[in-house]
Amino acid sequence: MAMTIKNQAEIDKMRAAGRLVGEIHVRLAAIIAPGVTTAELDRLAADVLAEHGATSSFLGYRGYPATICTSVNDEIVHGIPGPRRLREGDIVSIDVGAILDGYHGDSAWTYPVGAVSEEAARLLRDTEAALDLAIAAARIGNRLGAVGAAVERFAIPRGFGVIREYGGHGIGRQMHEDPHVPNHGRPERGPILRPGLTLAIEPMLTTGGEATRELADGWTVVTADHSLAAHFEHTVAVGPEGGIILTERPIGVVH
Image (tube, helix red, strand yellow):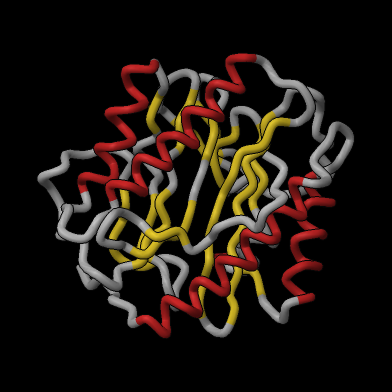
């Protein structure tokens, strides 16, 4: 496993890319409403990237056809934007990646569309809380397994399914670098987290089981039991007191 260690100048560039990702999330969150299509969300994200002279981490990656990923209800990750109109009570996970000055920022958030069920609201609250715990575990000197263990120890007792087939990753000049960051594990396992290591940490929880399947489009991953799924992600730099978030949202985010 060849983990890429960044210097402060590189982390600063990743923070700039991350701030842009945060701004895109703010702009998208402001227009999420019943009747909006996922293609409209994609177009807005593309416009904001262009405003800043940046490009999408996703468009064209292994043939992916869109700027962002939009995954609705039982869709976990990699949903392709299109004519689908959001409906009252939906939840939509939006994954945004930006390349700015040669470095990537990557963050996903799951948003309610109008008023949602208490089940959906609890899933969103607790998946975000799992992300917070995982980031806190991304501390210098911990082993990588501590990150996934934090997610699993929080989610399982609360009755959520933890997606094991997909997870986070190292990130920097490449969107996907070593190491893979699972959302399960044991705190004494895995490589030691070192200063300068940058990770995309991204818990994915469901209201049902952990089994997944891929749709015929070759991208969209859904829950096998059609249960709701949520996906929250930040890019972080491993720090002495936990992960330092590089994809913070500006004040004013619709949350």
